[in-house]
Length: 309
Image (cartoon, rainbow, N blue to C red):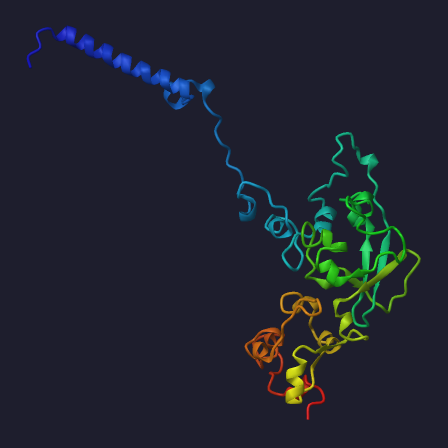
């Protein structure tokens, strides 16, 4: 095609190009796209590069359960969970005494008194409850005037604390295992030897009854009475487990509870088939030599079935 007036043609092309560019700029400003419009004031602020959250905290919400908090850069206990007492003592954090906006540090009440819970067991240390570390986080009303009923009555002997109930979420279990450290480490609470007599700075409040109470009065020997009819037919006495002989070695309560045995009577369906396949007692009693907890195998029935002819 032959163009007679090139100057007029270029003017038309320039004008069409101007209209197209102008329309793009107006559209970009309406959408707030500063990269096209050149309007620095309408540009969204650049995103700052923030440290990556742990995987359990990056799903759009914060999960403050112990397993999640343990991923943060805090001092940890031997289970890899956040050691809150150490965190506060090292001033990694400073817990605020109240959500009340008018609260001041002068209003804080830290109670420095220990409560002794004596266990019925001959081989398990007594429990010390430290008020001071708990009152860093909690008010008296949190435990003694709890909504729906007090967790602990403020009266000596009024709280019959049972380990099965703690595991089920009562007493200490209202917090521990949910927002505080779990119950896997028995020595975290059972810290006071029975050889040490109560002193004036210790308040004796109650008795902690272990879960094995139903098994034996001395709380040492656990007798496995399940499937009794089958054993009677085979003339095999029940197996007996001695806590004392296991505790005298290098074993801690947490080596077995709750990962292998749930510390609640009747909760473990133990059979010889499962033991021989490496479950329950077979976790250690397998004759292996590559584990510090490995022990003799299960070929000698009389070692556990005491009285077997």
